[in-house]
Image (cartoon, rainbow, N blue to C red):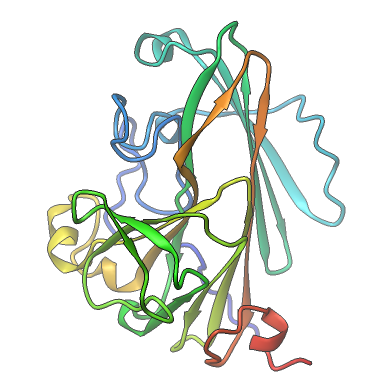
Length: 267
């Protein structure tokens, strides 16, 4: 029997009214990640009403995938706080076992601007203390819990026994989140977003967040595709494009093997 299970986490106390961002799913952080600038936390894109994009070219159509194209354009209100005209487009494509997101930012202004960006992936997991994240070992990271000091990851995989908030730098195109209890591995592939954020608030921070249930931290993990360390710079009428593919494969525990075929035991 096929069992349908949620793959993306949604807070039990999510607030679904503007201007509060919804705690869950995949919020888009633009044009600022976190508080790395003068704008509101994670920028304003995640709090805005997007529109269906009637002219999504030049992206080719996705064969055998269900897709929707959305667009967010700068408003006069946005220009008061971030004085740059832009168009932010997002293609979302869903196929068997895979969700693909293609964000694009176009500078429609007559002057250059820079921005930071992230796709904040709230993953639904069985037990945060039983997870492993592989693909980030030996990399440098900024620890946001320690004044953004720079460290090098020493563990052979990331496991969780307390709050974590790190920006891993120059990350590979493929990262795996192994969920032992559900015998499921999330495989994240990304392009154009060299950094990766790993975040879980743990118990004390969860209780301090009004839109997160006290126990919700146990069944969620954020692993973000991001461009943070080096802001993206766009000259007038230039465009930046990223890509993220999020898929799941049935898995047993195989340390260090990120190839889904190996996780599945297929030669």
